[in-house]
Length: 335
Image (cartoon, rainbow, N blue to C red; front, side):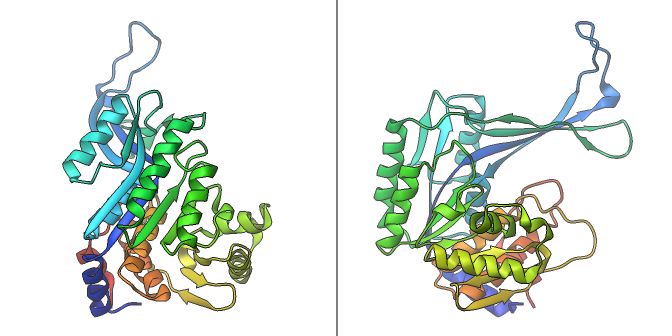
């Protein structure tokens, strides 16, 4: 584990770092209902959910951006899409309140702003239950006009950043094949690119790849063998992915920590473990952001992986939210 002095040094370096983030942003909306206030509807034979509280956060790539912002880099430049709907208004409000740069966020009026709406009901018992989520997703690719604008924005920011962080999470999101090809071309030209992709991590080459163990396994073997795989087999999968894609692989392994490999040399970083309740939702976003920020601060790969592990250790203890990790919180976990 890193020392407090090592964490302070990394955080000081991040304050001079310039980071770009391109990805699929969404809003996570929590609606809290108190069923003790519910009355049978006269119009329908149902008990409505009386909403008594609402919380709204940036999610998906937006959570990566929020985690990057929490580390206070010198400059943070997001590239993403926003729709012309009420969820887009919520996202714009978050951007405005956070002071995050919106110069390269593209408004696309005819697309949904992706959102995950989570009704949480209490009053039936002492526990709070999560009802089925309401998802606002897009099911068609972005237009060529929007694609051209995304590529134009990438080229505009590429000369002014130390690292480009990629959060490729949606099937029909901002990262099309043309956009991915542009990202790879920037990586080949010398820009440090750190890519995380739920479905397409195996399509990125010449970058630093940040899969979890399942994404890594699927990219290499294209099967579900990860269910029965052991630690050594996951390491082998990461090594194979690194060699196949001419990339460094930073693979997270949950409670087993993480590894960094170029296919030949492999280094391991232990996880930060706790007793009691943890919430892993958003831990991968925190890991990606902390690792990217540390690399932008010119930190060595294994040390960056250890820093990412500490940051994730902060957020998994924030129950019920996709939280962020501040430099002070990360330092508090260090030795």
